[in-house]
Image (tube, rainbow, N blue to C red):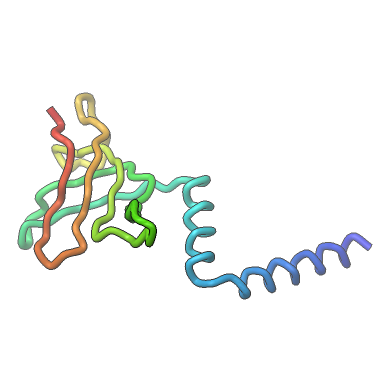
Amino acid sequence: MNRARIALGLVAAIALATACTQESQNRLGRAIQNWTGSNGVLDMYAGEKLAMRFIAIDKLTTSLGTGASGEARSYRFGYGIFDENQNWVSDPGEKKLYFEVSDYSTSYVFYENPR
């Protein structure tokens, strides 16, 4: 009896997941990631040289417009520890900062002043 319920629940979950739109599946994936967290790293290069590194990033988020359309903005944003000495460790004095990464062809990174 229990196996039948588990099997039925599994079939229902698979059917529900395949019926969702891609965006709904992405939102579900982001919700799970937000709940479980992650330990991301964002490296930014100037040519071939590593210019700056952010560590302990939970997620990169796409901003949505405030208008009726709610369209996605052309940048991603997040919070991470600015690893000034690029040693992969959050050292004393290294702060958690806000940053934005552009989607445009002109590369830029906007970030909070660490000092």
